[in-house]
Length: 241
Length: 266
Ligand SMILES: Nc1ncnc2c1ncn2[C@@H]1O[C@H](COP(=O)(O)OP(=O)(O)OP(=O)(O)O)[C@@H](O)[C@H]1O
Ligand SMILES: [Mg+2]
Image 1 (cartoon, each protein chain N blue to C red):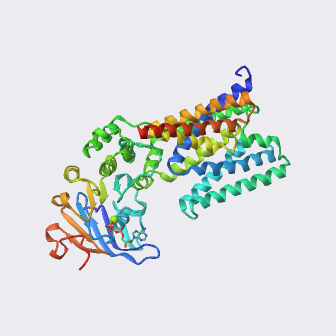
Image 2: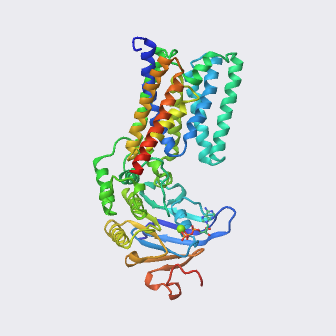
Image 3: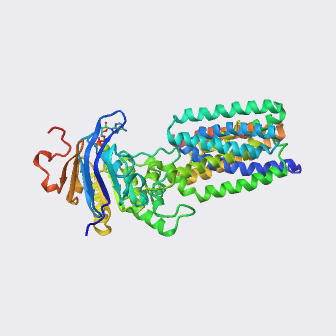
């Protein structure tokens, strides 16, 4: 029996308005429970690819499907967790870590009224998992860049997504926290069956856990287990072929 | 001053407005939409003029006009058909121009209009207060119910949209709440200064708050305090309350800026 894919791109090409093709003829199928690394050089189109997958950008040609529905109008958006690249909040007032993570919990709980105790527990759990328990009530803007990034990761986790897309989540995060994040993602993937798309051009700690690497450079130039990566690609961020 | 009925009425209506305006304005300011309150105020002016012209309650016509203007701003903004500030300018000037034309047609470029522009404590009637209190409580209840959702959109609009939060519906609700605030605050603060009561308390609070929740609470405190102090000053000095209320709120901004500055230096 064929398992329904979480992500399905069929001959997708994409160009920004007034620009040339950023992605050409991309086919990508991601099944439930896969842990996929998306690698490639700067400007290769990784962020663009993820945004097409999430239905935030419409392909110029071809089709994008999410949970078996057209990605642009998917009804199960609450199952998505997304951490954009270089995410930054643009709030004027001070916001605490807990308030940020609570915002990420909203899709998984009711829209109106007060937070339920089980939601509070999930929020605390997400904060603990990224190692910010002691800073839970601190103002986000008073934390270091790496700590802020971990708070945003907790926000993406708090909604208990079944598809988690992280775009360069470890920018500015120290090695120890990268290890912790890798363990956390492996746990979510193995124990809870969360499908993960992990964008990065350097894979340090997660390399052990990913079973599939997709190399993006104007299209998909490699798709397979990390072990089969041709030698010439071994530095996935290299720019000359 | 409380032995006078009109002062009691003014304080009741003022208290509701003093709480509602910063509570709604809070979410506008956090999202860099401060001018939306002003734009909606200008449209409300056209509504007031239309009410005078048609001889129906100006509060209701202002509410209707402000709601339509607010939804128009939000629609233009969300479709990015026009840059945000140009969309606002379109609505601003259309509102003022329509207001001037209606007022001239009604032949009432006079004192009555002045009350709507700058507020008045003398003209608040029992019927006004009943309307302000009932609609004001509805507005506050909506803010309380939507608090978490409005915060989520405030913190990360795109993230909320990705995970299926009804961002467009929440944005429309916010502009309708703004229109409601403008219409209710009009008699006390005046159309030209309503936006100030939605923005200044929030600015003041942001300098000393330690979380979103505390910033909202402090904004409401500053708003309520400004209305109470401003109405009192207006009564004793025989001044338009809109002016005194907003001056108190502006003073609060200066004070918290100083406190925040001292704290940062310490
Ligand atoms: N909003 C935009 N408008 C126009 N062109 C864009 C836009 N965003 C990206 N591009 C172009 O599309 C190409 C792919 O960009 P993309 O951000 O997807 O690359 P990336 O692989 O994520 O790079 P990085 O490693 O730097 O994050 C680049 O050439 C970039 O200049
Ligand atoms: Mg990128």
